Amino acid sequence: MIDTSRVWDAVRDMISDEGRTVLSLAWDGNGPAHSGCHHVVEWRGLYFFQSSDLDAEGPFDSLEEALALECFQVQTAHPEITASGIDRAALLRLARDVVGGNGECVLINGARYTLEDGELRPDSVQPEAHAWEQDPPGSGARSVPPAKLLGDPQMRHERLGMVHTAHVAPLNQLVADIRRDRDCGEAVPWFDPLDGGVKARVLFVLEAPGPRAVASGFVSRDNPDESAKNWLLALQAAGLPREETVLWNIVPWYVGDGTRIRAAGPRDISEGLPYLDRLIQLLPRLSVIGLVGGKAQSVEARVADMRGDVKFARVPHPSPQFVNRRPENRAALTQALVHVRDLVLPS
Image (cartoon, rainbow, N blue to C red; front, side, top):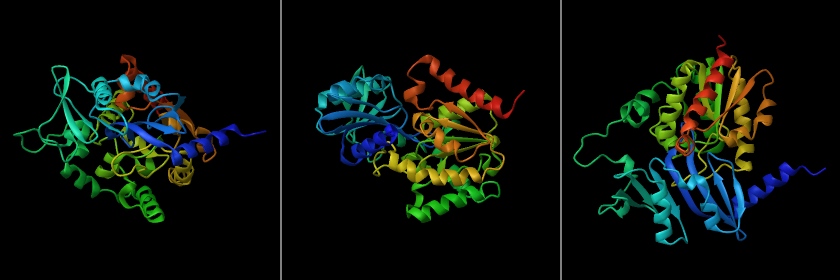
């Protein structure tokens, strides 16, 4: 009998290798350990939707059909659109759908636009970096909300000084080993020493780190983006103690091109899973693995083979693309984490 899953994996690899990305919509750079990006890829005259957060869809007969997906109509924190072969008017229409309220910014092919009175207007002074990473005119140092502590250089410096503390040292030795094995340097962020390290009873697994995780240096709920903020607040609301958790990715290295991330493909996942196996063996108290988002959930059977004595829980991805889509989605994220808490800390 033909193994259809292997056939589809081969097709996805062909699309990744041969396809041409015609549009990317990114937000915040990453999640708590993750990218935040949707892509539309053209391959042999057909169009495919790929995402760091949502299930792949397609094929579509036209780009317009792919862009009609609901996720391209959702207001998004700090959006950035990169496209080729799409006229400016169409890009502005898409940008208007995803940008927030007046005064919010969007980057379109590197140019910054601001929403004013319902219209997107190009800024007179264009940024060298992302608009949301710059200080407001006339301000002092950029303020960092408490939920985004690793946006503060001093906080990052202090956290880096803790990466070899005893409870997290074996995990960060794994990071050092991956960096050496793949010669990829800081493309693999550190485990956060404020999490549970080897004492954790819950391992949350996402897809792959994005540019902001690489920039902060950590796979962390404290990263300076809306996805990380959503994750932090949901964990707090669920009452799941931080010291019981650790956060990781099925692909532990950045898979983008330096300017934007792409969805992890079957080959990336196959190369990343042996390192996940090594991580799991370093967690003697592990009792629950939370699979966060569709890509992580797709490998549940393969992860289950690594450790037979743990329970699995499926958790929605905390990105704004999910949380902001419907009012009930934030509650669904929190409730999924409450379920994890109850598995670890039964009343």
